[in-house]
Amino acid sequence: DRIAPIMAEIEALPLLQRLSDGTLPPEVFRHYILQDALYLKHYARCLAIVAAKAPDNAQVLRFLGSAQKAITVEQGLHAGFLTQFGITSADVTSAEPSPAGFAYTNFLLATAYHSSYAVALSSILPCFWIYW
Image 1 (cartoon, helix red, strand yellow):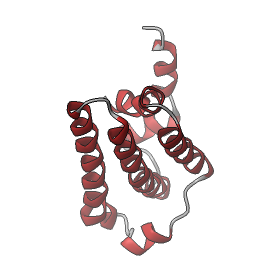
Image 2 (image 1 turned 45 degrees about the vertical axis):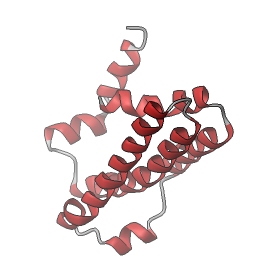
Image 3 (image 1 turned 120 degrees about the horizontal axis):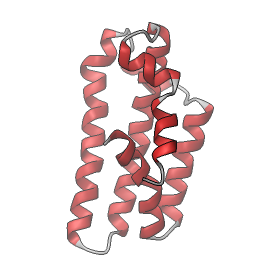
Image 4 (image 1 turned 90 degrees about the vertical axis):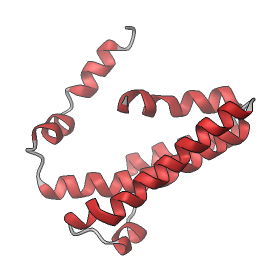
């Protein structure tokens, strides 16, 4: 309830509105998907670091499973969806993250690596919540 105004702002972003109603220009969508593939690569590693810090086996398995899913989704993008938009594996390999994507994934990786389990967990949960 406390973040309802923030969620409303996120949901009102023009990118998300145009993405959901199908009016996002193809070149913008291509950039978005390419950036998402880069993000998933790094996010999977964050999840694995959090798993390594987890206090019990159930949490280790939970976050390792999530890391595996992130890698599987990234590979699935490469195998099918990206090719629909003319994006090759070479494009993904040579792609540079946007400044925001670079800052965010570096924040996540640094936090996961250098912080406690609780702090690392708090840094990765917003992604889960927004996609949920």
